[in-house]
Image 1 (cartoon, rainbow, N blue to C red):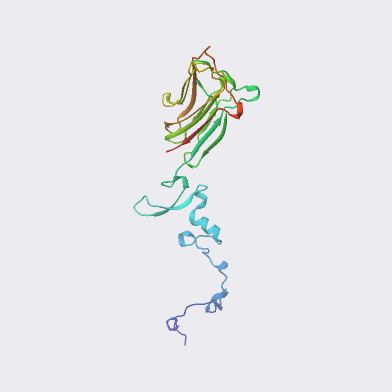
Image 2 (cartoon, rainbow, N blue to C red):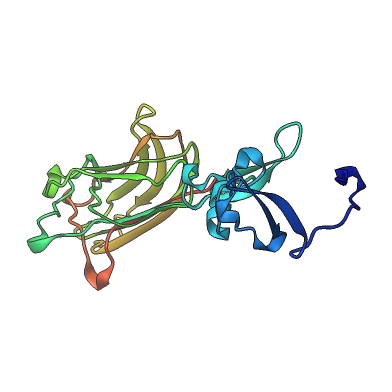
Length: 267
C-alpha cells in the first residue's frame, strides 16, 4: 500500500536528506546535497525576486546600488528630507553642512622678453591680464570651478576675466607689483563684476605724499570681498593717477614677486 505524503514526518532538510522524483521519465532518488544549483532555472535570483541577479559580492553590491547609473565619487547616505528616511546617493560636497571650497589663483607673467607687460596708462583704469591660472579647484560636484578666461594676447591687448560657478560671497586677495611711480601718485585697484553692470568693489586706495620722495618698485597688497551670481564675469582693474610727471607704471617681478590674485568662495 502506498504511503500518503501526509504521513511522512516533518524534518529540517540537510545535505543528506533524500528526495525522490523523476529523471528523464525514470524514478530517481538523490540527496539534497547532490543538487547542482547551476542546473536550476531562476538562479541567481533577480532583484525582482528578492536576490541580486549576481554571483559575487562586488557584482551583487553593484546591482543593489545600481552603480552603473550613479555618479563617480557619490556616497550612500540616509536622506531625511522627505516624510520618511530613504537610502540615496549624493556627492559629499552636497551634504548639508559640508563646506564648499572653490579657489582660483592666477599670476600675471611677463613672458619671453616681457612681451605680456606694458605701461599702464596714467589716468586710465585698466584690466590686469592675468595669464597663468596656477590653481583652479572646486570641491562642488555640481557647480564646478571658476572658468578662467585670458584672451591670449600680448601687451595692452591682453584681457582676463573669470566666471564664478556659485552665487554667494567671494574673497579676493591681490598683489600688484609695479615700477615707475612718482611723488603724489594715486593708486586704485578694484574687483569689477562685469555682468552686474560693472559693479565695482574697491581693494586698493593709496595716495602718495608729494613730499615723501619718489615711489618706485612698489607692491600693493589688498584683500576684500564681493558678491556675485553664478556665472557672473569678474575682473580686476587698476588705475594710476597723477604724480610728478604723470608716469605710466610698468609691472615688476623683482625679488620674484609677481602680480597675482587669489579668489575664494566663502559662503
